[in-house]
Length: 314
Ligand code: ZN
Image (cartoon, rainbow, N blue to C red):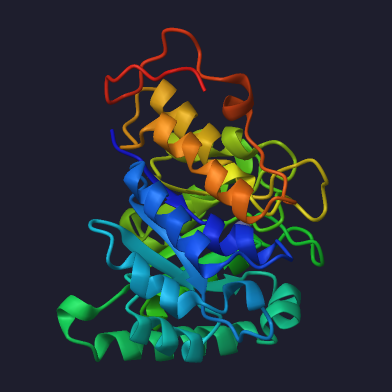
């Protein structure tokens, strides 16, 4: 079985780092990670540069990433204006977050649920007006799905109706996002069943998990057992977690790839090449801690990756 690791470090990682990574280093990172076998990378976010100067070069990064063969170039957009920029830049996949907590949505995007759904409808309209071959894949991401720092847990009925509303507005797919690191394996299973029961099996294939409380990989396993096949993660857990010093924010890509390959699942990733990509980040952002257990401990003696190629100790 093949699992898609969707690298989100150049977006989720860098937006949580105050230093600005030089554009050339971002390009080197994306190129090297694609060469290590990662097939999808969220390379940026189309938000105003004054809000996130770290991602101000997203259009240039998308244009560069598109030159890499067989790489799906994904981006995040906060609204229809950002989506127009993302489409112009040539993104293959566009994700619009919808916080299922309306308080969080108002604080972060300054929009009610109804307004975000309207943005989704506008974006879907823009995409459907494009020639079929040029249409990016459009995902609505249910963020704070496992609980919100402002509202606590969100009722199932609200999550289900928002998932349905995103699909009705024209999204190709919805995703689940544990923005706050509140998920556990039982709640992961529960929400996957709930949302798939509402929008259908094929309209939920991916999950975005954080490792805030150390449950990231346990939650991945629960998601895999429910049949999801796309998992977001960040190289070196870049960006950390502002609420939990010492914890990575996103799941660490290296640990995720190692776990999946250990389980006999096919990620297409060459672990040695993947681990080597860390040096690009370390050189460009020397003050940022990088996380990862397998990169610290090394590959077990005798380990063979799914590709059958023996991997040297890191
Ligand atoms: Zn995230």
